[in-house]
Length: 331
Picture 1 (tube, rainbow, N blue to C red):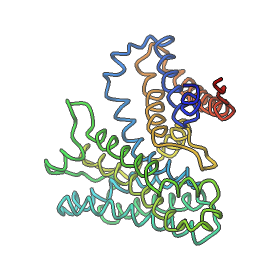
Picture 2: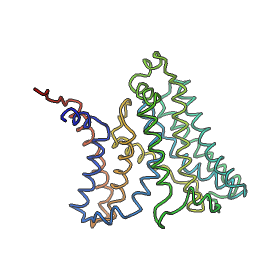
Picture 3: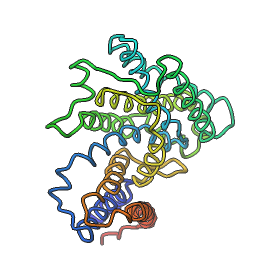
Picture 4: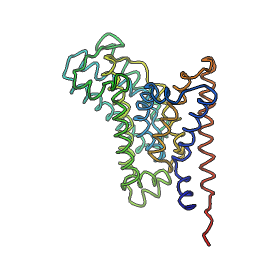
């Protein structure tokens, strides 16, 4: 039993689970939050789903030792792509959907190609594409439509699949998040690609010498990252019947923090999909749960920042303790 416990606390998601429980306990103890009202609310789970879909591929990219901050521009890019194609030009919604996803693939290919063909860190590369895509989306929208906001009237089936409200309050994107979590979990923990990702994050040179196609895998991860962000933006445009060139920048900070809270190391080589999932939940509860409390809203940013820092430190502390844990031998 002690051996099983030692293996469990070594898991990346163990610290994330503790952080999630600790955040809820804080709000209940000091904020007067009712668990029934918190878990019955849609705001935080909707927030977590949108964040979680972006966090999944970015988390895998971070496990592989890379980083993508261009997601901040890809979310409005995805929403504007479908709005311009199917809203302004009145093309079939399928064309708009494919256009939004294709734009994500193109940006991901550009990021990945630059990452494998140059020695420039991925942080700098994706910073450049972040700014470039922002400018492209703004200039392209004004040039094509004459405005920075474009309406979109999606057909019923597209609303049902991408923008429906379940029970009138839960976004259908929650189901997409659950499904993608299962898929990413299977890929990372049950397929050889997952071993390759961990090997890249541990030592990319050794992984390449072992025959792992590190360049192709890295490009694929960048494509998944930018396409996922574009998908979230596309779903938002379908749900809210419009798209704007602004927005998405908060996703950079929110995504990275939720991934780190979920137990992924910034240096790569360590993490899990379950941890990333719990990290998104924890971040959502921290940022949205404050509005269910009796705490003065003027203190909200301070409390959110302190709680996120505490969650990261707690995760890191328990991981270090777990790695030093040695089970007692049975006599």
